[in-house]
Length: 116
Image (cartoon, rainbow, N blue to C red):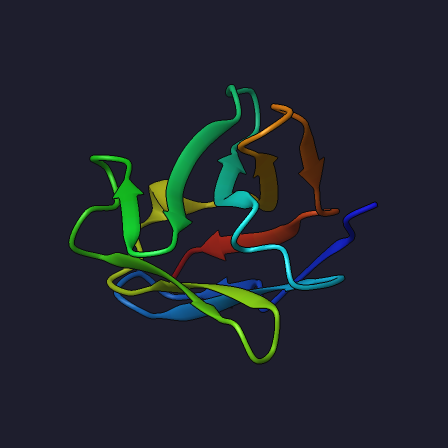
């Protein structure tokens, strides 16, 4: 059983920055793709960023502004978000996707609001 706990959300002005953290329950990064998703009100959940080893991938809407990374010693995944825009407002979810079974684990989500 994999447990994911997000933190770091909040209210920020346009152009500001936030760093989201996702603490995992163990050493899982070699077995899972680690993803950040987000869901805005009335919209579908969308994939924002992925990391596994040296592989990273980003949605076009966040390229050049967001960076996903891991700290293996802390079993934590981060999403550094810079130059935030109002359209980045959403609940952000951490996800672990098993490369072997295809199973997904989800965190509880953290709210990010970008507003002046």
